[in-house]
Image (cartoon, rainbow, N blue to C red; front, side, top):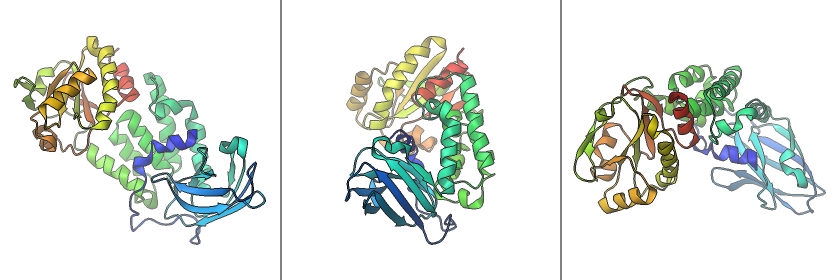
Amino acid sequence: MKTFLLFLAFLPLSGFAQNASTKIAGNNMGYTINGTVSGYADGTVVNLLNPNNGQPESSAKLTAGKFVLTGKMPFPDVRVMNFNNEQNYITLFLDNSAIQLSAKKDSIQDAVVTGSPSHNEFMEYLKVTKPYEGLINQQGRYDAETTTKASQVLENFAKTHPASYVSPLAVYRHFQINNDAVKVEEIFNTFSAPVRTSPVGNYIAQIISEEKKFPIGKPLADFSQEDKDGKKISLSSFKGQYVLVDFWASWCRPCRAENPNLVRSYAAFKDKNFTIFGVSLDKDKQKWLDAIAEDGLTWLQVSDLKGWGNAVAQQFGINSIPQNFLLDPNGNVIGKNLRGAALENKLNSVLK
């Protein structure tokens, strides 16, 4: 289950339409999984699920502890297997190979999988990143030295596996903990063409393109908008401080879920030359004000109450929220879309 949850955090990178130039890895006949599992009764249903939608892509029933699953992958990607619809999963990085699987009911997560090059690469990835699992999955607080080591491990894996469909996962995690699109592009350009043009590769390319609009180390353009009392507040008025420009809205559930993390970071660093500047994409003023009060957002907030038509959101091409920019005292971007532990780790690294 732990491995499955790791990939759930990566799901935004999966589930895109296949690019026409994507090649099918392995043989052209598809995959065959020959499994042996003990501890389950004959007739137990074995499901191979797509974790993007939870739907089975192949199913079989156990006969004398054995089963066979067949199908065809458009490109190597994560799939999960369970028995009797139990919430214990075997995670596979599946390609079109002849695969052998052996497992026991009481230790289903320790299944032995052989015959799949992509799964072997995935297990290698998990092994080398295990010491940094919490940081990579954005859980807990970590110092700059640990972040540097984790970044190097991720970069090394990606660069030494340029033809692996697992490598975009390493690059994405590198980006999450560093927000360094320049480094991501450098690594991404070493990948083979099929990996770069896979759905996950296309997503990485999209990230790189988006990040170039507001590059790290460059200033964020000034703007101004009215606060709840009608007073115009400009971004430039925060010069000399570290400031997180936070785009959110009262109706945005992920934003509201993230707000406790912002409150915690603000409390921890507000006396160390850090503040937050909220830009709301609300239309209803009362709902906006109620959310500010309910979530305990004590920093400055502005909004023109035009929803997605918010002038500042339009200025920066904001088409999803929450989004944020972390600026240094000179107004230069030093981080983007930092949430939870990632924001705290970044602030710890710059606010000594």
